[in-house]
Length: 284
Length: 249
Image (cartoon, rainbow over all chains, first blue to last red; front, side):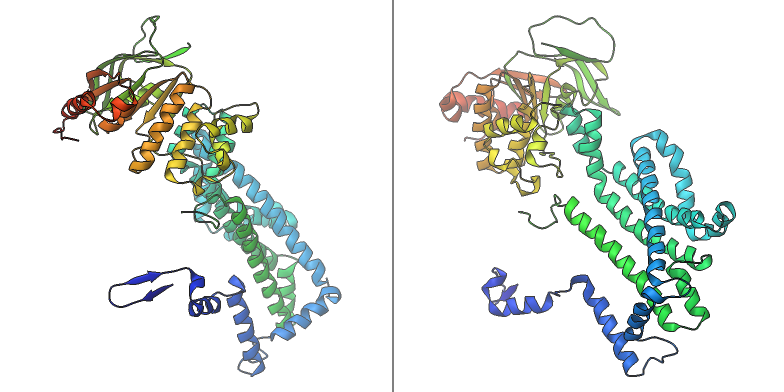
């Protein structure tokens, strides 16, 4: 906070020093953090529905969505919301776990060795240029319409960003630190666990965040094109029976899943990357 | 003393009393000859300062001695147990201070080892700190501790205090002098600071045109290094050898 005094003078003082700036600071600081704007959108949505500006045939109101959720939770037909949410989460998490593991191992191997780079980089770059969602029909032909093709789809979406970011991050670890560690006589396993992998972690976490977003994309497409359970199936059912409240409910659940996943990675970053100069608790 | 040899052409090894032997070493970068048949011998326990203008090849020589680079011709013989202190502290930002100190220590009670050597540089209280919380001088003290932790026979220092302020640099000189009394290492410090050379060295080498051009023994006590005619003479000699006009200090 700067207070201008006279000409060409700037005065800096702790934030607590002036009452005015403290009040202004608190007002500007949003207590809800990144949930502030979603909450504002929610309120605006409710207001538009309540005033009739949004026609009930085009949009359900927040309260309708909540009551649809409460009803479907245990009384949904042909399956309950609880069961649909469970199967969707299972697909997303299993797919994400497989994708992150495969992408992580391949990305590490390619980052560390010329052989790995030669083996993996070409195919991954090709896959990265095709929208992975376009492969679903092929996956269904190869793997059937069951869970396997859906999970494979989600895994593919998750594996690619993890691979690409981890590969790049390993190759970009500060060479001066590697030289230092080598000069200090570090062993090869410790070079990996103490220098290369921690140095690549920030990039790897960016990959993880993208992986969560892509796996949700994969989930949505896989469930809407060919499924008889899950949130996507619920949305399709709602469309068939003209239940706009249930459609909104499904979309809201996808949004919450995306936001939650992102928040989990952010929390991971705050903990795992607390050594970074930009994170809190630092001294200049 | 175990030694490793880096060479361009195979030659029989020679038994010697020296800690470091550089024999006719050539290093080129493209068309540019940075080290031109350079010869150098350093006795055990010597504190040698390598002085020269920037670009004279002193850091290149240091990297050859550290084994971070190989000569194009000639051979380099150095102790196997050696350590290097870089101009930047090069701490791993994701490891706490004590883990940085023992990064090259394979086993044993690494924390106790770290605390011991951190105490020598006066930083045992910062053992659990993140590197980002250290000042420039503290960080460079950690990298001194990291170099000394394995009790090396040879310590190479590449302009280690160049980025520190004048007061911190003087404190570091005191610290290095103190460490010299407890460790039997041979030390080679590269700098372009004539006063730093006079403050620390047993022997000052001036590098020019890819070779050791001048070789001075310094037998002054702490006071004699700080003031007096001997110091002033040495200083103006060094300044003119480095290629600067000497000024009265």
